Length: 375
Ligand SMILES: Cc1ncc(COP(=O)(O)O)c(C=O)c1O
Figure 1 (cartoon, helix red, strand yellow):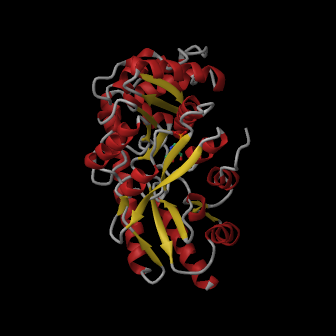
Figure 2 (tube, helix red, strand yellow; figure 1 turned 120 degrees about the vertical axis):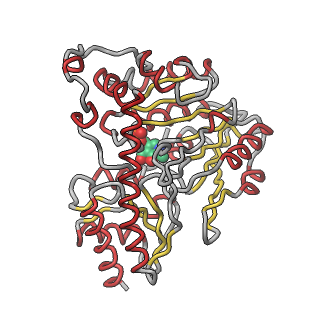
C-alpha cells in the first residue's frame, strides 16, 4: 500500500504550533476541561481507573451518541479515535480487496483524507463536484449520475462541507440517496461540522435518508473538543457497525478511558446544548469579522458565505500559486492558512475563523499586505 502525502495535515502538523496567527484550524477555539465540566464534580472523573474502556466506546457513551440518529441504539454506533479513524476504517472495510466494486466517488472540494485513503486502498477515485454558480455551491448531480455504476462501492460526501462551509439540504441528500440506491452503492457521510451552523438550524443527517449509510462524526469541530480524539460511526446496519468495530481492533484497540468519560459529559443534554450554543456564538461573531474584511477588499477576494463549519473558501485575484502564498505567509507574517491547492482548488485559500478574534483580524490583515506586495 503506497500512500500519497496528506498535504493539508502535513502543513498543519508542521506549522500550527509554530506560527503566531493560526487561521488553518477548521474548528472553534477548544474548551478547557474546567469549562467542559461546568458545575459538575471533578471527583468522579479523577477517580476513573485508567484501564482499557469498552473498546467500541462505553454503553453510556454510545447511547448518548445514538440519540442523535432516528431509531438508533448503542448497537448502531462504534466509537473511534476521532472522525479520522472513523473515515479510515469505513473506507478500509468497504474498498480494500473489493474487486467487483472498486470505484469510489468523492464530493469535491473535500477534506482529502477520504481521497488519499481511497487511492491507497486501490480504489478508482472519481470526483463529484460542488460547483460555484456565483451565489452558492451546488452539487453537480449530472456528474454524479454519469460517474456512478454497478462498480461503485462508496460515495463520500462531507456535509456541512469542508472547505466551503456549504450545507446540502434534505432534498439534495435524498437525491444522492436515490442515485446511490439505483447502483447499490453505500454512502459515507462525514458530518463532523453538524451542529456548527451559523443560522442555528441543525444540518440533516444522511442517516435519515438511506439504509446503506455510514455517518462519521466527532467531538472535534462543532463541540470544540478535538483533543479528546473521540469520533464515531453510525449506521442503520448493526452488522456493518459490528464489523467496523472489529477493524478498530487493528488500528487503535479503543478510545482513551478519560476521553470516553469526558465525551459522556459533553453529550449529556444540558452540556451538549451549552456547547453547541457556544460554538454557534463564536461562529456568528467571528464570521462578521471575515465579512467586514471581504467587503473592504472586494478587489482582491470573492467568497460564497459559509452556512456551517468554522471555515470559508476564498478566491483571490492575484496570480500567485496558493501553496507559495501560504509558505510566504508563514515565513514573512507568521500566519498559517490552508492553501486551496490542498483541496484541488487553485487560487483559493481556506480561512479558519473559529479561534481568537484578535488573531483573526491580524492574520487577515497580513494576507492583504502580502497579496498586495506580491502583485
Ligand atoms: C471533514 C473532516 N472530517 C474528519 C476530520 C478529522 O478530524 P477528527 O479526527 O479530529 O475528528 C476533519 C479534520 O479536519 C475534517 O475536516
